[in-house]
Length: 226
Image (cartoon, rainbow, N blue to C red; front, top):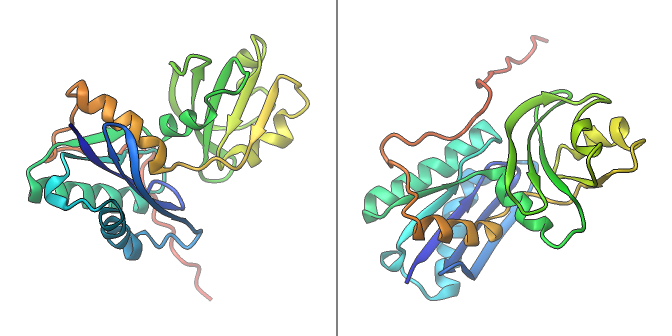
């Protein structure tokens, strides 16, 4: 038996779920552009444990969304996950943020799924999965133009989903092989199945040395002088 606590803080959605052998027991999440993860994450953890009537001592592993995504959001999630793993002496599991988004598209009649997260300016974080949910192109930070993902659209139907889709629609909508879903956000709900699979495979992280997958260097923007 495996009870896993899943933490998703890579984007605007602060999301926590508790699952038993991949089956959801409880979920608490709030999507806000204000990035209130620091205030809400530990409260959400308490809420899902209480709802499922499970104590922290009964949790067998902590799973965390590893990125790419918000620098601050990822730090908050990973710090909380590490702290729990150290204090409870349980393993850490890392789930790729973009992969958990793709799980939400299962059942769509498409040939390729491309999760895209908003980055700076016209950039997005993206990777490509085939219709069997197998990753066929690694995660990149890339600038969107009229030729983006054209090699996949030439081979079949392509679904783009996530917060970066708004940057893609104007450039790519002329090609009828593209479809778009702006509503998908990373959620700990979809992490439940993925984290259980990794737990069974003993695909675990080194708690001491694990770092989020930032993909790009953190840039501190200074406020302009008045």
